[in-house]
Image (cartoon, rainbow, N blue to C red):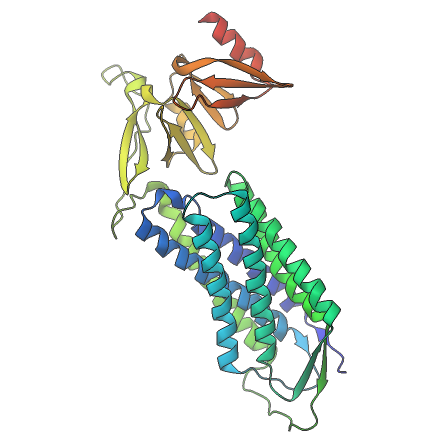
Length: 373
């Protein structure tokens, strides 16, 4: 068996590529329920391509970080097929998660498919190694790798999709997913043995050595992730139309004496591929979701491109009260308070009779407000 050593710099680069690709992908798939079906499919394909390429780049960079006493090459067809396998698996995952109702069981199954896709890509990519190297897998190691891959992928999907898709959950989910990819690769390699095949002649040195090729792959993958990450930057001001996007100006200034009262300010929201507006007075409550919010019109929640902090300059303090760091409620639509254990909830008089958590630090102020009314 040949002794294997590793380039620490390339190992770190492989980790960084996995995490960056995961973050870019999760940002691309944020708020997809506010896109029409055609636009959502395009985003899913883009996200699957980015993550699939990131998985392959992580694997290839980590493999090029391995230093062996012989020169190895990779079969281009099998190498391409391994990348396509990763892309296809991730596309199945996103189609599963972003079309139809998302449930805990769906997230669980998505984690299994993700882990299977990464595992399949790894072992198919290993088979692409040139014939002058004989590869032997420890059967127990393969089982351990599968367990590590599936469980870590389920955890990553649960964090990224199991609850509110906030920015912090996206970052944490990206880190866990990136580490999951790397854990699969390095666990598999730990139980992989390589030896020289004396029946095959040594390969000639290529024009690019392993480190140079790895650097080229890493830069290409990094650039790809950054370019696709730019797609989510204008989302806060974008109208998702049929192939077009145009800037819209939302009201941000406080009204003057000549303008309509505060409650008449129009709040933008996106529905059915169009930018629409809801009078402030018709907003039942506001819920923060990462950099964006959802506003309730009494029947359903609507996606709003504003952040919750942006509302503070527009809200009438006599009509709205912040009861939680993620919720602002219109006093006119409060039905009452409900206690459940040591927690308090504000019951909103909308169609769903939503129960909104009240922060302990705000419960006293909230009760005083209700008594004053």
